[in-house]
Image (cartoon, rainbow, N blue to C red):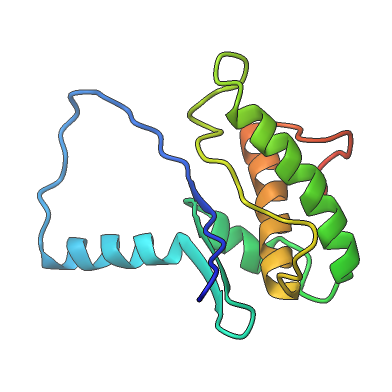
Length: 146
């Protein structure tokens, strides 16, 4: 049986205003589709049987241009930090009256006794850094830095 770790992080800003919207034509639809695809980062590893899906506008660009490259951090470092980040994230999901429920929507099922591999830990860690810098949040006592 395939066990899947689904981390779907969706941040959407809904702005309800009566501004004119451009008429969609075929080329606009293709551009919009390409933009949506580039805002989704997915890591699937059939050997490890875990998957991470991050849907966040701008994250893919940030990961490829600003984040430290793969191999910069050790897997143990990433796992340790991710455990702190996930615990705090899940605490905030459970306290919607204290923390913005639009930012903290879903719990993350991250088990410390499972080896998710380097790529999953790398992208999850970098999402947490991106999230903290983008939304001016601090999940732990560690200041987010790149």
